[in-house]
Length: 309
Image (cartoon, rainbow, N blue to C red; front, side, top):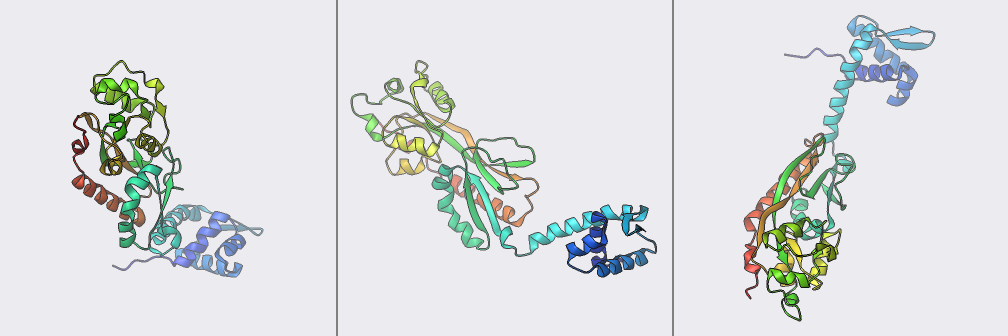
């Protein structure tokens, strides 16, 4: 069945004139002449068989018919513009901004990004690392990958990767004047923190160690910096299975105790509810879940890094 609709150009002229209450300003916005706007609106009024504006002393205002028509036209044009912007090959629409931490980017995402870029060469991924959850998600930032689940209004959250935690240290700490051979030996070392102490509190509880003063430890706001200090032998750290993987595999870190907290926390994928249907967000969302699934499938048994003393 064919649709009987008024001409689109006439509706555009009507919407601009009704919104601005001026044929002259509407003509300027549409880059046409005043006469062209008047002609388009006259044709639309002929189509409906009634006037849409009240004209008096060089000024225009909407009458009842125009007032009824305006919100319908505005909503229709807004929806058409939104869909069109997704389909048009606009370079600005091909930039995907991902918020995350520097350590997660370097240890996990960056080595995998070439696969995404090979599949979708028209999408440029821009990493925007910050220590805290982004405030502009859906505006300055398209998606985020963050440690721990956080409820944010207007933002959807999807779990990516569960993280196991355990004590790790440089091999050198197993020897020397104060060798780290059992949980009770932790009292002789400075504990390295990358949070406010919650991770160590959980591990010490699992290890049945309740006499340790955590306040004397070394506190760092960045997980990557804390791991580096641990690699240098400055003290033991509660490490996450994802971020510590490379240092364990390279022998820069070892696990001194057979004590693991499985799935203590997780990494989550965040995106604005308003942006979930954008092609670049949809493609990256599917891809990141695929990469997370591959990681889970290939994940090693970290008990193989426990040092037998």
